[in-house]
Amino acid sequence: MNLFQQLKRRLWLFLLVLGPATITAMADNDASGVVTYSIAGAKLGYPVLFALLLITILLGITQEMGIRLAMITRKGLGDLIRERWGIRISVFIFFCLIVANMGTIIVDLAAVKVTSSMLGLPEIPLIVGMIILIFFVLVKGNYKLTEKIMLGACFFYVVYIFSAFKANPDWNMAITNLFVPHGFPFTKRYLIDYLIISMGVLGTTVTPWGQFVISSLAYDKNTGAKKIKYAQLESYWGAFLTDFFSFFMIVATAATLFKYKIPLVSGTQAALAIQPFAGKLAGTLFALGILNAGFMGVVIVTLSTSYAFSEFFGLTGSLDSNFKKGQTFYLIFLGQLIIAALAVMMPFISLFHLAIATQVLNAMILPLIFYFLINLTGNPDVMGSFINSKFQKWFTIIATIIICIASLFTLASALF
Image (cartoon, rainbow, N blue to C red; front, side):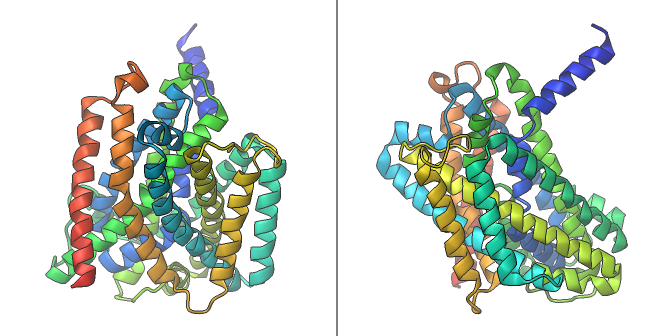
């Protein structure tokens, strides 16, 4: 077999496993994620890109751990927590997860509502129609169909690249801030904002729900352990891809809103606010990107709750199961969408405040999820020879400690 044939074969094997890690990572760029990244760029400017780079590394490592766990054990993270730590721990974790997830789903659906209005689309019919269509496709379809739809949605994030270039940013500042934050006066107020908003960026990029859904999707895809190296490669590819687009979201708002000191209260406002500097087309594409991100987030985050509930309580939960067999799985999915739809109809729901609060809450829950993930993937009795490397082990442990400290500081800042 010559070199070309070997590369062709490896590419084909990679494409066969493509799906779970890419979809999970890209779903981190849901509407609440776009809001958070937009706020980060508008409030902090280019220096926040330094935090994004470190978060990308953490995302890649933890996603690889999650997908490796599912492929070796043939079980989801929720299943393993229930089996090894019991039902009480499972109930507590699920409660934390569903609170954070509902906040994220509401933000995603609220973004769909507001963005549809911006684009001249009817709000209520669009939301109702989207919920009915999503539920119908999931119940009547299967994992492969859902995967194709989600991968298709992933490629639409290219609109943010266009918006960033149209904003005429300082590319030298953007690139160099990935490695060393610089270029702006780091006052006490700025540093406090940097910590809190960086926690939001962390919470929207490395999500608690992502740790559950990646293992569940990998299980649904039924990829054999022989292809584990390609699945591991996909996990790092997915992490790079998601924050590649996040980079451009931050750059677009840093080059316009931060530069001209324009306050930001929502991601959809960002689409309008960048128009005077980047053009109407760039603003419209930014808005379309939010609409697509909202759709993707609604599907994947809602699915993660259904998967987690099924795994924590030992029920059937799979996109390949029919409605009768997986009734609880599908009804929990639908119930979340209905609650979120009712919530977004309330005029006092603030997309801005809910987005930041939800993502900070996600970041605070992460250490608990990481404890179980590190424990399971580092246990030879569970993983055999596929345990964590020393770098993976210590990087995630140190990251967990830093997140705990940052969480306490964020709470203190909010209270005092």
